[in-house]
Image (cartoon, rainbow, N blue to C red; front, side, top):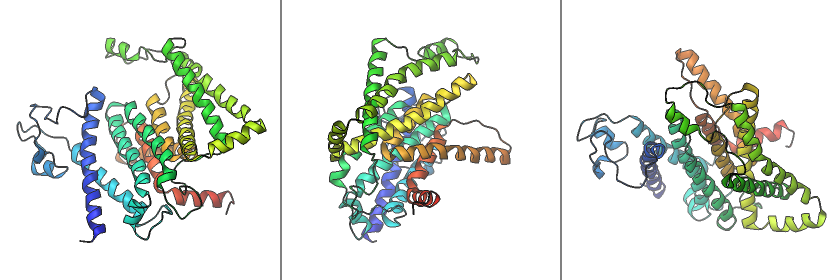
Length: 390
């Protein structure tokens, strides 16, 4: 077997192991349990799962989908997540580095050289952390209608770190620092983003001090008291006004950032600072995070005010914020407008199968983000041709 074949086999196996870990995340995270300890055990009999019964996909097949101890059925979700993750890890590696359907412009003649020695691994890690986390978030959202914010925060943190590190790690044949593999913005948008982030920090301080109120603050407590109550507990329009108050300092900070840069001397100095490698990477990720969160939050606010019921969840806000930190502001906004087409496909499937099941929006958003990442170059060519830029 060639070195490339051995490496692909390793990537597939590693992806399956990540999928096995994602199953732990999907099961434990909504229950507020540690995803590190204790070791995995059967939910029915409590027997600790031996290492030879925890081999991704293979163990489930050998055990015929049942616990070795009590013979309780093991959900088919487990091998599906493991296999899907392995396919995604392998397929996306092939897509970027072997087939080159997205032009990375990394130096090197072969995929392994581009991956290891030209920094392609950093781009791959950035994308795969997002992909794996969004897969877990989608599985949880489908089952429980919630998106754990810790998953979104982890993706956001990785996005910021990778964007800041990219200028020193990525080696391309392009005149650009990273050939568009990581988020970037103009100095003006960087200033607006920094101002908005400062305003958001003010809002968080005010929230912590109790100077402003959180929306739906008593939701979990009231749901515990009224587990069977289906009627809305809150006045949604009034609750959404609290979110408008929370966001007001961020909006004001963004406007202030734009206003300050109207002064030529300040703009000249900021241009020099914002083009420093670390600052440029961080500002790109920050702008992407704010753009992703803002487009969903604006939809949530407008929809709630118009229809009088909560439109979209705050989990979707954090999900798209995390996506923006990885793919940048323009692309995350595009992904938001692509997501409804996945909703239409689901509606068509329901019509053809004559089944009706409402599902949350998180999986549609996640699918749209992955599509934008994979078809980045083709979308860019189409947009350039459509707007007559080429």
